[in-house]
Image 1 (cartoon, rainbow, N blue to C red):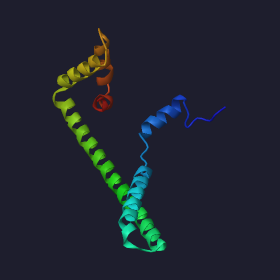
Image 2 (cartoon, one colour):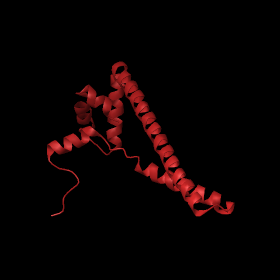
Image 3 (cartoon, one colour):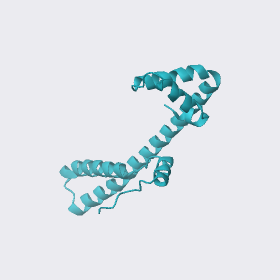
Image 4 (cartoon, helix red, strand yellow):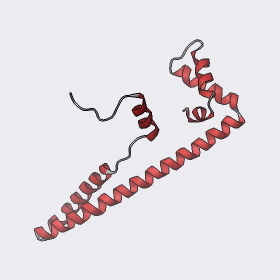
Length: 138
């Protein structure tokens, strides 16, 4: 039997969901490295440089541009986290100041997802029973 990437028992699922999504910078290293290598080789083709110099310049750009892309993605990811924290604070304030408006928002969200009859009210009751769950509900 083929081994799965992660467990599917209740405890494993709970841990995986609590950990949140995995962030990888490999794509940025690859993208930056390819970009650096292509621009280096394209820039030195007409310069009549030795193969060794071209390879050294390509390797330097591979590392430099790969690092640059990874750092840029890291900074962008941090900015996204900061924005998420800001939006969460806004949502907490709205729950405190206009709770009925926030309940109506949840009703409309779940009606938009196809909940009908008493289901939107049940969703509102379940979600708003926990402040943490309420604030986290998009």
